[in-house]
Image 1 (cartoon, rainbow, N blue to C red):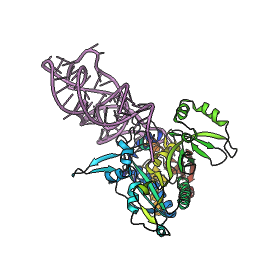
Image 2 (tube, rainbow, N blue to C red):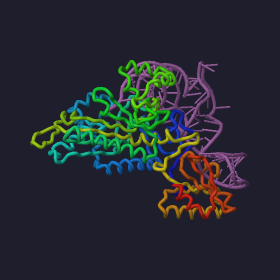
Image 3 (tube, rainbow, N blue to C red):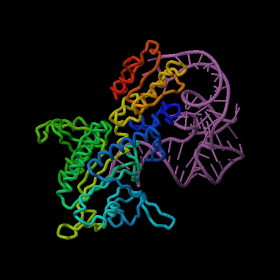
Image 4 (spheres, rainbow, N blue to C red):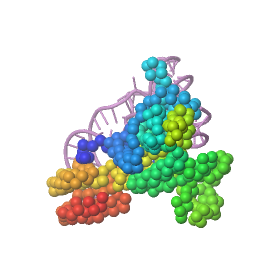
Length: 434
RNA sequence: CGGGGUGUAGCUCAGUAUGGUUAGAGUACCUGGUUUGGGACCAGGGGGCCGAAGGUUCGAGUCCUUUCACCCCGACCA
């Protein structure tokens, strides 16, 4: 992509209402813009990142044997009335009427719709197990949307649902999905923890959350420094009063109080802030029973499906990457999420030598299938450099005044360091880095 | 949904207590020139239904009423 032809409206100042780094930098960097409360447009850079994350999610799920579908976003209200969730979800569901005055809902999640899809189409235990998912827009009319993409009303989420003939098989799939989610978040380059999300009625294995560790996270986690144990703090204390009391205490006193306690493995426990980006849940037959979705078992007896449900907040992940990876200058994308891996910055486009080398490198990297941006704008060096840092290209090739000596620089965004490279070795060096 | 706040140029905001030239600044944008390694400088220029609707007044960005939107704190959040 030529920067001179791109639509990337970057700004020096952030809107006054953006408080989180991800919110500020995604807007300043021209990735997204706000359309209304909790509603965001994805501009070209934001769209690329979103699609990269979506692709990784899809790839790993397909590898694990899941099938992608796409359910209608608008669903009949009657579907929700039958499961009892019309009332349970209340105002969080946005209801609309069509020209015939029939009531519909902008889907906030899709358990009912997915059960309806499978019902009477999957009729034998021989057809099980089955894991269906979609990556589609959701709408939840949050009482108070905030934090940019982190808590929007309209968002992109992957929601998966699995169907089984037995609890044992459902648990097997649940574990498989946990492993698959770990692969996904690892590939994205994120520092994350899997935590128990519910230790009550269903039991420790019933629900697990995946959290990206970041200071701005809304959830407090207790994690063991020695083993993999982790829990959402809400699950550790019995009553709401206890949680409320905890929220009033300072982070430090909380540390002291709980730090004395040891994990069952003997390791030290500590507190971390996390952003929930994934949630997997053992459902049992709650929805299949309510909606009378049955299959015939080995004895020809009808039984409701055993189900599990799996979610990943795809658009929230865009923000999470930045919450965990940024500095005062802007975004620092991980290699898997960077909108462009390499930025070629021509310091002075009026300089014929700089210009032709930039064009040559641009053509060469493209031919090697490297995602590359050529900053060919008629702007000053400092302006383009600040822009590159704000957007967060992992590497920027700076073609400038050192070219007289046959040298160009490679700027490493994360390290914020320049290394000088001979112009004849630049491609080789870049291919090695990325 | 309770409590608080803000709507004036693309963005950040003055101006509103006390109504009165043609509504301002910075930044961004356009033109010309100078500049060319860290968001440059000089000169000129375009850009506003002062959130919307009513009202008071000779006169409203400013006062009154209604309404909408957005933000913050809390409650809520698969």
